[in-house]
Structure formats: C-alpha cells, structure tokens
Image (cartoon, rainbow, N blue to C red; front, side):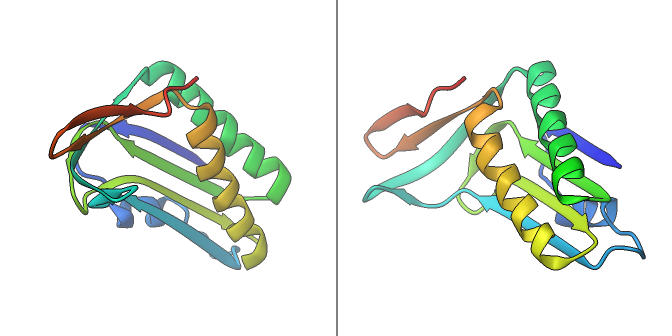
Length: 138
C-alpha cells in the first residue's frame, strides 16, 4: 500500500505509522523532518512550502514504487506540508515497513534524499532580516 499526501494542515506521525502497520513486517522506519530555528548561523523564524501538487504526488509515488521494488517494502507512507510552518512544526513524514530492519532504514533514507532532489516542493526560509528561497528545484 502506498499513501502519499500533500497537506495544508498539521501532519500526524500516527497517521503515517498506522498506514504502514502489517503483521508480516519485521522493520518499520520513520523519518520526521521538522522546522529548525537556524540555518548556517542565521536565526530562522518560519518556513513556507509551495508545491505543484499533482506533479509532487506523481514524483512521490515513483519514489514509493522504487522502494517497494528495490527494498521489498510492504507499505510506504509519505506526507508533506505546504503553507507556513513555524519552528518545531513537522514538514515531512516518511514511514516504510519492510521484511527486515536494514531495508526499512535504507528505504527511508532513499525516500527523503530523493524527495528533496526530485519532488516539486519549494521551501522559503524567513530570517530576522529577510527571506530566501532554498534550493529551487526541479
């Protein structure tokens, strides 16, 4: 099962972990990305995320399908926020369940790394003295 969502509302870790529960899995890995209060020594006050939802969901689904094929994942759940997020709010959650723990860890790492490289979700960091778009891609 693949569960992909782009949301304007706060993300739920339990929603993602519940989506990947399965009695036949031996390992579940979860990555939770939060808004931190600094970048390169500058104080961050908030972030804004924008996305091209249809394409973002398509690209996230490709990532999940690769995880299913390469690591034998039973379930993959990927949720990403858009809109304005404050410090400590959750920006992204990825949960992966696989037959064994090592595959779950590897698949989860692949998911976040690939998401940041290929998915059309853009991040704007706000500082005390201005704002900047970060890593405009793809």
